[in-house]
Image (cartoon, rainbow, N blue to C red):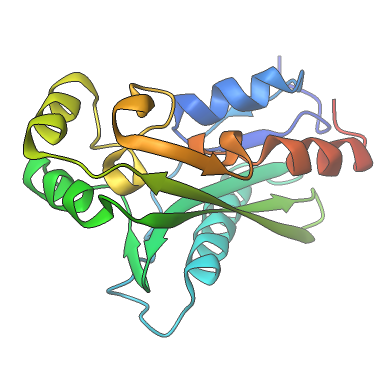
Length: 195
């Protein structure tokens, strides 16, 4: 039996986003689709928040083709430092390089969300949090890489997994750093009457 159209579809494979959205008490389905995502190399003319928003739009639009007439939520999280975007690392070596680059600095974690209505109208929102890293030694970096699966995480880190080893403080929404700006997103979903 198919779900009613009022139950949104989360267009994301991220288990963290599923957990965060579920924590809002929202009933939802999950469906992912292959999407060509933008990054700093493919779209150097775009600001980091524009990249995150466009990727969120693309995810929602792709799932909308497969599931027309449904509410769909797409989301994308990027880490930015001094104009450089840090997406998901392609390898442990790249993850190691990311952590070295972020060490001792404060980065921006930007999540773009695209909520697409059954009629195709989009509401876009974004949230920016700031994460200040400790000065990381090679020993700490190697310990972190050994304990945390970083290859599916923007910036090669997760505040919720041994974050105290590498992170000094978070300013702004912690949930946003994990993958969804739940405070603002919950308000948006309630305004749309979504369960």
